[in-house]
Amino acid sequence: CATTSTNVATVGAYRDSIDLNGRLAVNYQKDGKTESLNGNFSWAQRPGHVDVELVSPLGQTVATIAVTPGSATLTQAGRAPVSATDIDGLTQQALGWPLPVSGLRDWLQGYAVDAGGQRFSASPAHNSVTTRDGWRLRFVEWQNADAAQPAPRVIHAERAAAGDIQDLSIRIVVNPAGQG
Amino acid sequence: SALDQFKSFVSTTKSAKGEFTQQQLTKSKTGKAAPVSSGSFVFARPGKFIWTYQKPYDQLLQADGDQLYIYDKDLNQVTVRKLGNALGSSPAAILFGSNDLEKNFTLSEAGERDGAEWLNAVPKTKDTTFEQIGIGLRGGVPVAMELKDQFGQVSVLKFSNFQRNPALGAQQFKFEVPKGADVVKQ
Image 1 (cartoon, rainbow over the protein chains, first blue to last red):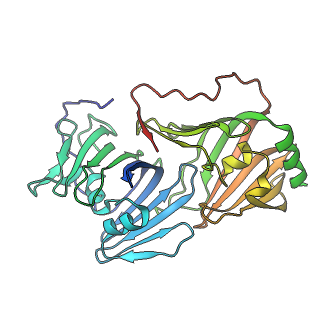
Image 2 (cartoon, chains in turn blue, red):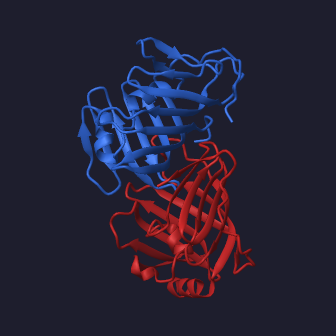
Image 3 (cartoon, rainbow over the protein chains, first blue to last red):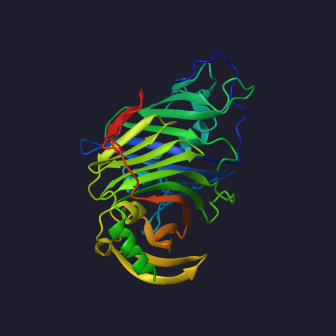
């Protein structure tokens, strides 16, 4: 159940270098059928570089993604790496759903760019926003909802179908730091 | 030999239960060694099992012989999909699946190590995330498994308190959707 806390303290300052681990569930429509992917992820972010690993529930690496400002490379188990300038398009083409890496860079730390182009920083009391590119975000749970600088624990990101982009919902749980 | 132990295990073990620990051997990109996850399992051939992660978080993989359920407490979601060949050439197929393992895997002896006789299983189909699976047996039961994926990442499972053919309730593998969890049927 989402804690409807009244804590108005917003998330800590954005960090360029951060290592996060967690689990995600991606639900999307493909040829009219519901598809769902469950897995774990590891997120290693440095200035100008993000390394993402998608791992199956039993611990096998399914795909690795490396993103730099100029290019993105995705390597799936048993397949040659595929590169493109835009990561969202690359994951859509290779995985069948767009992993919004650029969005996640902000969301995982409780930030977003709202519909008006303003910087949004979440707090337990003010925990939902619609982003400029049409994602409805809800910061459902926090590592510690009453902290002076709360950090997101459970994030729901939904995007309604528009044009050729289909219904997509991503649920993310960020493991507490140190729990890998 | 490992193969003899394994064949006798498969033919004489209709069901089993026990505990497991799991750890990623190779360090992930973040350089930190992955934590050990642990939990319990119970299975009945063919295709019925409950694989429960208790630590570091609650996650459940359950098959009732027909459907595969994946439930993650924090994500508050149950994913349901036809079992069909979802087991295919996964470690679950080795322990819990049907008996004709040679159909999906090429088996070979891998000698003795850490007090167990090891069997090597290479999936015949290429569309699996596994490159190779090692099974360590002692006293006729699996004591460990080493799962190597296509990226060379190795995940080690260790089994303890392995009880063969325990008494299981008729509803043992019936899945109950936890209250309030969203269900996504694939």
